[in-house]
Length: 285
Image (tube, rainbow, N blue to C red; front, top):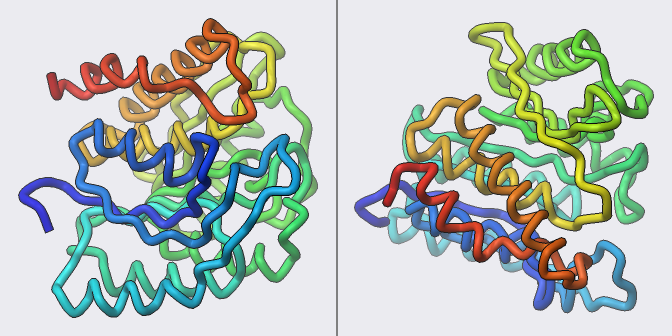
């Protein structure tokens, strides 16, 4: 498609709220990645903390878009899926991965966005969890929070903080169950003062922690921003651990910028002024 790395981002898009595609496109573009988007739905706003938003399902458009792309020979170095609206959309993403990964070195990063704080999102049922499990089986990297990890493993959700033994056991179990080499658990909290991510590689059987001091408050779309920045690092040739560190730094700086500006955090993080430091961390400037 372009003479540089490319990624297909399969998410919904909100007219207001920096989440999903409105986070993935600018972050991956800043990382020097050519982004193709396969939108799953159009919403008036993001959904966290907001009511009465409009929702237009785009399931019927997804396969025709794929057919057109295939007819002009499009392939991608990475596929990145996030919030999906239905089990059918999850099946479509499985098809997409088979048809559009450029080669064996292409990466499929799956953010199994379906739950948080111990609960499945209201719009989903157990059938959707089964569909997400199919996606995880095709993935090279999965980025669940601990609620999603519990659902994927069929276990009871455990409240934080977590011990290192529990975190490794969870990551290892996900890796083995879904035959995925790389697992990044978000919301990894060893105590009440810090939080971040835990990156597990099956190749080394080790967990590396990227933890930062906890910032009080409710900040929407941090997971979308983190996963996008993580993929940006990986596509620029950095290791999983280094990419995780860069993504955590970028996400934390964006939270701090949001707090400093004092805006309405329901509309996402104020990450724009933090992009230059993220780009520098990727050694692009």
